[in-house]
Each structure stands twice: as structure tokens, then as C-alpha cells.
Image (cartoon, rainbow, N blue to C red; front, side):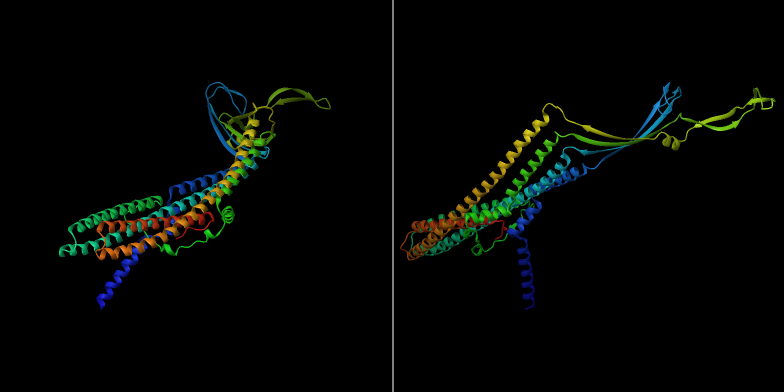
Length: 474
């Protein structure tokens, strides 16, 4: 008993592990959204638009530049700070800090920021649209896998039925009740159904590979999908009208809003182009200073020996000697900090640039921007019309698929009753093998048609759900 419990536990763990490795449609879609290259590329495009928005905002701030130059002079030249001729080799250094800001430019900077904000929003809508397209493609590929699974199941069932008939026929031939020809015909039928199984297995492998590649799965060998109960899948989209589905699509799908954002971006682009007609007012400020290696200053001043230079009389007529004093001094290089302070200069300037004529470049840009704006407006109208046409076509397709599915169900019911009667006649020896195989093949063909109609109907319904903005689930 204990061994049985242990074995049962291991079997349960194995089954649970296998179930976890199977991929549902929701898991496939989520994995595709995280790993698909097209989505990753569009996500990078959104980051570019984010950077452009940040750049346009920072472009309004004043610019700041800091620079320094070091010059070495040889031979006779003029010192740039003392303006004296010098024959000594010397070096000079100058520093400068400058800043400029645009005070008015026809609101071009403001409109550039607004345009960048709109472009960023549009990039997110395009990303959302890309994700929707990938989800729809994954759903289609997933249903192709399920369709291939069902075809394979039908082929295996047909093969198993033929195997039972072949076993029974072999016994009847051995007893002499049936001719050997019946066995040969069933052998051929069995071999043909074995070939059908191989073909459907290949079809299933290809469908599974296509799904794995679409969602960027690398370990294809261990990839398998879970099979939901298709008969329990329901949808209410078929109960709505085209107008109702279209209204939901306008509110939830990104196509129309993306086109409208592009139109708004074109409006801002036109405003930027018109801004070039306006005067441009700028303000700039700068601070600079410098240092020269030959700049000197007087040092060590002392009083020299007095020299008699003449005579003078005082108020009472006395004669007095007049002496002239001289000063002794030396020179030294002026300190760096003193030179930086003494040579400092500051300036503030305002500039006004009035466009008069530039080869009609501004007017051409404005005219082209008007054309782009009109094109964007037409694209909004076209996007709305395309969406309505797509929904109308999807709705018509779903109605047609539903009618075909129900009609094929009735056909299969009739075909199954006919085959059951044929089976009884064949078992009673009242029908030859050829006619039996024909009836059996017709039943298998109708079963395949029903499977195809069922998945086509489900996919068409999911497309309508997609246009309504509903998540794609099975």
C-alpha cells in the first residue's frame, strides 16, 4: 500500500510538471509582449521620443559655455594685457564664461515642446497598436496549432477504427467467410491512414514551430500548448451590431487616436514654421579675464640719496637749498590672482534679428507644413474609414463562419447516421470493402471540415472581440 501511494505521488508530480510546461494562449501572448522584437523596437522608439521631449524642454534654458586658451609667443610682439611691445618669449592665458538665451522667437521653442509632447503620446499609441497586432497574430497561430491537433486526433481515430476492421476481416478471411481481396483493400486503407497521421503530425509540428518563432521561444523541442475546451468558448460580439462594435473600437483601439495625435503634431509643426517670420530677440552675457607671464609690477620702493637741484627764498628773504629725491625700486611678475582681478571684463548684449528675405525658404516651409497638415487630416479620416471597413468585413466573416459551422454540424450528424448504417451493413457482410472505405473517408472529410469551420468561427469571433478592446482569451 505504501509503495502504491509513493508511485501515485510521483505520477501526480510528473503530471503537474507536464501541465506547467504546456503553454496557454494567455501565457503565449504575455511572453510575446515581453520578448517580441517588433515590440522591443517600438519601445526603443518611445524612449527616443522621451529624450526628444526632454531635449526640447531643456532647449528653452539659457546656454552656458566655459573656455580657456593658453598662448605661447616668441620674438617681438604686443602683450595682450599691457599692450606694450616685448621681445621676450612669454605665455598668456585667458578664461571666459558666456551665456545666451532666446527671449522671443515667434513661440517656436514653446511649440517645439508641445510637438514633442504630442509625438511622445503618439509613440505610445503606436506601441499599443503593435502589441495588439502581435496579440492577434499569436491568437491566430495558437488556433492553427489547436486545429492541427484536432485533425491529428481525427486521423488517429480513423486509423484505430480501420485497425479493428482489419483485425476482424483477417479472422473472417482465415475462416473462409470473406475473400482475401477484402483484407488487401483494408491493408491499403490502413496504410493510407497511417500516412495521413504522418502528414497531420508534420502539420502540427510546423504550426507549433510557427507559434514558437512568433513569440520568440528558443527551446522549441520542449514547447507544447495546452488544449482548452473549445466547445465552452462563448462570445457576445455576434449579438452586437456593427455600429456598436465600431463605437467601442473608437473608444479603446489606438489607431484613431494615433492618427489624431499625428494631426496635432502637424499643427504644431505649422506653428513652428510660421514662427520663423517673427523677429528673434536674444540676450547674451560674458565674463572674461587673463594672465600674462611678462606682466610686472613695481616692488621694494626705497628713498634714494638727495641731490641739490636749486635754490629758493622764504617769506623773509632767506635763501634755501632745494633738493630732489629719487626712488629706488625693482620689478616682479604680477601675481596670477591680481592679474585675473585686474583684467576681468563683463559684458551684456541684446540682439534682434528681423528676417527680411531668405530665398523664400520660410514661406516654402510654411506651405509644405500646410500640406503635411492636410495630409494628416486625411489620414485621420482614412483611419476611421479603414477601421469601419475592417469591422464590417470582420462582422460579415463571423456571420458567414457561424452559418458554415452550424451547417457543417448538421452535415456531420447526417453523415454520422449514414456511416453508422453503413457500418452495420459492412459488419453483416452486406457491403463490400470499397463502398465501406468510401463512406468512412467521407465521414473523415466532413469531420475535418467541421474542425476547420469551428476554428474559423472562433477566430472570427475573437477578431470582433479584439476590435472591442477585449482581451484575447480561450
